[in-house]
Each structure stands twice: as C-alpha cells, then as structure tokens.
Image (cartoon, rainbow, N blue to C red):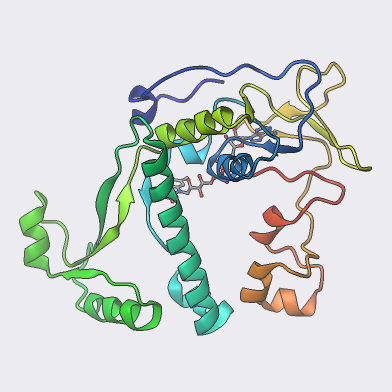
Length: 286
Ligand SMILES: Cc1cc2nc3c(=O)[nH]c(=O)nc-3n(C[C@H](O)[C@H](O)[C@H](O)COP(=O)(O)OP(=O)(O)OC[C@H]3O[C@@H](n4cnc5c(N)ncnc54)[C@H](O)[C@@H]3O)c2cc1C
C-alpha cells in the first residue's frame, strides 16, 4: 500500500520507492517495521558498523510515525502523577531525563544529517481550554522535581499570540519542537542505506522461524507464506502473541514495578515486551 492522503504525503521532500524483498537475503539484524522505533534502532546499529536490514510492510513511515502530530518533546502518554505513583519520585525523574535525551537525540540527528523537508520549528505551547489558575503551580513543580523549565503564559499574554480567544493559560516549552515526521523517517532510511544498511518496502513479514541459531523470516516473495494483512493493513503471522517479560535486567521493569510485576514473575508488561529479545517469536515494533 502507498501512503494515505495526508498533508505529510503531499509535502514529501522526495518520493523514491524502495524495492520489495525477493529471494534470499542475509543480514546480521533484521528489523520488522519501518516506523520511528524500527528505523531509529536500525540507524544506531548501522552507525555502530552492524549489518542491518529493515523490512516494512508498506512504505517507510506508513504507520503512526509518518502521520502523527510531529511534536517532539519530553514526557510520556501516561501523566506524571501516574508515573510517579508506579516508579517513585527518583524513578520518574530518571524516566523523564530519558525522554529529554530522546528529544535531544532527534534534534541532533536532524542537524547532523541536514535532512530535507523536516523543518524543525522550536517551541511548543500547551494551552488550557478552561480557566486553570493552577497551571503556574504545575510549572513550579516541574522545575522543582524534574529540573525542567517551562514558561507560564497568563491568559492575556496567550491571547495576544493567538487569533482565537478560546484558550486560557498556557505553558511554553522552549526546548520542544515540531517536525515533518514523514520526511524525518525517510531521512533516517536514507542514512541507514548510506551507511550500508538495507531498507525494503512492500515487504511484510508473514512468518518467523526463530528456533536455532539461524533465524528465518518470510515475506510474500516466499511461496510458503501464510500471513495475511488485517483490515488495518497490518501483518501478523499465525500464533504471534506478546511474550511475557522474563528479562532480569529490564530497566523499565525496575523502574515501573506494578502489582502484577511483583506478584507474577512472568508479567506481560506492555512496554518491555517490545524490548525483550525474542525466544521463540519475533516481536515487531509498533
Ligand atoms: C494521531 C496520533 C498523533 C500522535 N502524535 C504524536 C506526536 O505529536 N508526537 C509524538 O512523539 N508521538 C505522537 N504519537 C505517537 C507516535 O506516533 C507513536 O508512538 C510512534 O509513531 C510509534 O512508532 P512505532 O515505530 O512503534 O510504530 P509505527 O510507526 O506504527 O511503525 C510500525 C511499522 O511496522 C509496519 N509493520 C507492521 N506489521 C508489519 C509486518 N508484519 N512486517 C513488516 N512491517 C510491518 C507498519 O506498516 C508500520 O510502518 C501520535 C500517535 C497518533 C496515533
């Protein structure tokens, strides 16, 4: 499938299609899924001189990564209070620092590669739709607990910046920025290729054979394929399911100790099961 009709597709800096995988291809590390997670991992492997291949079911950045809001800033989808409740104050601070590092990683990658069409715009406003005098206290708490500094904008100051009078107070993050995410992903793919890695498009993994030292993943080029695309265009192979996390050194599990984690050694922690090295199954990004 080609990209859906989005603004990002309409403003692509370049549109080069990559070949589909056909026949046999050997690689040191195979990454399934050419989204932000897969391509970032592949780039770091390529930078470290590893042999790496990405197979993407559709086009590079076809999934959420190539059609999201494009905001690059620190933090997580879960609120700060939730994270602190699970990880404790110190754990929450370390996770926050990790997310700031992630933001800086993207900023530096864009600058180092001079990617076409990514156009980072600095500054992100988080606006309130209702009068919220407590926002100033939230800013102070961020500074105190996370050593992260935001600007507080009272309602009149915010309204002097916006055409709409719908919004009230705001916090401005002068470190966060906005990018064209699809051009960013295509820039990552180009850099992976420049470093000797390979990126295949229109190449869904439909089967994985992971027992033994030599792993084998099948794409539609193989006549024995079994997998089928679901109605969202995602490919899964028969029997694939998230494996529980058994990793002794899972930093995320150390930081986020849920009740399920402490009472069941083989918990199914949503985030770390992506990170776990597969035993018998290959886990796709995304
Ligand atoms: C509406 C929306 C707005 C968002 N806005 C933001 C934002 O502003 N800032 C932000 O930081 N985050 C945002 N997010 C979250 C962010 O987009 C995701 O967290 C991130 O893109 C996930 O990246 P991923 O690589 O894990 O997944 P994906 O980008 O979904 O990548 C997975 C890839 O794997 C491919 N694939 C699937 N199955 C197979 C297979 N069997 N074989 C080969 N390939 C396969 C898919 O085609 C896809 O390209 C937003 C999310 C949404 C939905």
